[in-house]
Image (cartoon, rainbow, N blue to C red; front, side):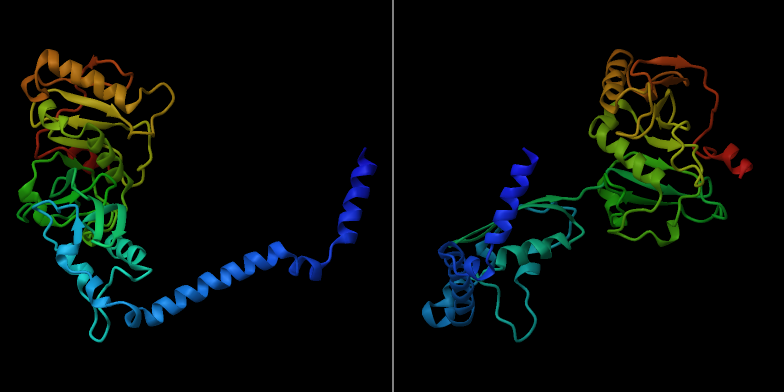
Length: 319
């Protein structure tokens, strides 16, 4: 059987002819079709203004329909799309690359998290966007940044669900959980529209994003961890959810990074919501600690009590 297969392969190779393949009717048809399409597109780009009144298809503000930006995102995307350098023609619906160019321009805007769709029609462009929004505020003060003077004003820097830094003026528009880690990496170089290069902040943002709008009802004021900058992936050192005062929650690891035997993030959240529904907001409970890592509420001894001005006091002494 193997010999027959070898003979068949030999015959196919021996009968192969490059000239015959190139001159085959099917090959010629495909080649002529491709050349025709490429030529037509080239001619259209060069001479469309002579064939139809191109000015009737120029993009204007009323021909660009775009998902409205949130009130706190101070940006005029229509203006951005319609601005062109001096000497260049304004964007036109008839341009063959107008959809790709529009999507590329919008993806470069920090406020835009995702360009879901750009649709072109004779009426203009319809654009569906998802805007980036902050989920938490990274705190920077004398308790968690070595060398930060007590007299120096504390800072909070908003981050989105992926740990990307957002403009600081958003602080006034949102009431969001704080993210507290000791000695945040590269805090002095953190700039809007760049992901913070500290995995602890990225993981804390992922936890807050999962909890979402429940954070306020649950009474969560802060997400923190005692992991140091040298232990950013230390799964045995959990993240915790803290109210301003009251019961603290041992959460564990970020969503998707659970260790063996640790419950999923959704199971943890379900257990926490059920607990708060029965007992009230975390800030209304006695000062104690509950552990969520098994997916069930386990009340433990509070081994580390700290007020808002001394959260990292013991860590500071160990460094």
